[in-house]
Image (cartoon, rainbow, N blue to C red; front, top):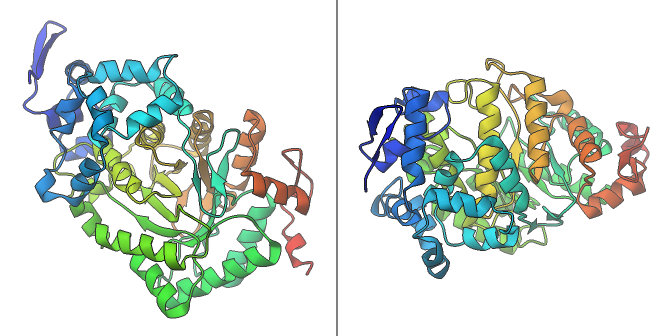
Length: 456
């Protein structure tokens, strides 16, 4: 494999595919922190040129972590459809990019191809795309999934209702739940990040969510974002009602171990949900990811954060999830420095998830010490909605007082739906109209009035 090119009167040489992949990546502070980023814009262009000539077979044959050493690699590789892979393996990355972007290539054709490629291939083609390419390509791809309702259908745009509270106070949580539902949030899931992730506390919150959902006949899914083993224990010991089982995941075995996770644990959780979960299924898992998590746990094996993020999606796909989202700016400026990097990462992650074949959303967010602000995050949310993103977050006033980060609020999903002519999931849309919170796809003056839920 020749890993050099002459550009701008200079010959650029790269020692490995790993170096090419890292230096072909758009500028990210995380790659700089790892010491693997391109040293100049010219070197970045040279790496992209070299990468464009590499074949998909070269990428499959050189996974980020060797097959023998890493269960994430084994899951990704073993899930490849060999017949489909053989149709594409001799393409270069540039040719695969052109095929994806071609007007004659449909979303169905891309979805079929996704069954025959690995995460390194997904990451490589992402690196050769502009932001508009990422939006255009992702818009083609439609990935649906069913838990209690079906997410990702044409014409829909969903949100997660995230009623986090600094002390897990039941009254505070439920106040946020009522406000969020009244503003059209929560058709993707009602999901809380708990302060207290004890089995007893997790079970208590799940039971309160289930009671509210059943009392008001809300067509959605419920989840508490505790560790998978805690949720399993809540089912076993407390008979907790769980529609979706959550877990944060990484793109390497070592990264998952930093989360206290193995593939076996996830499989056990998945199997338990199919037997004892309270949703209709069959898609019963919810995963969150984010560029830079592997670097933060020294589990990136020298690879760039885009490639490691793509591997998260290949790993997630194995468990047929209902929801996957990248918490794109959550880790901080050490990994994504400013609004330009956060917006780029959000578009990259959404495209890579869709190309992998998973139902992809995005937590368009940032930490308070990043060089970005709420306008930047609203820009990203608009771009993602235009790209066919399945869902975003809904947090009171866009300010998560428990996790201490900034996010999209309760009003953004409704505004984006109206701008782009989109609606919530059908059953949820009908429920909003029945409750009087919306009419013909637009919020009514009753929206935001949580007192409606106190009437009985």
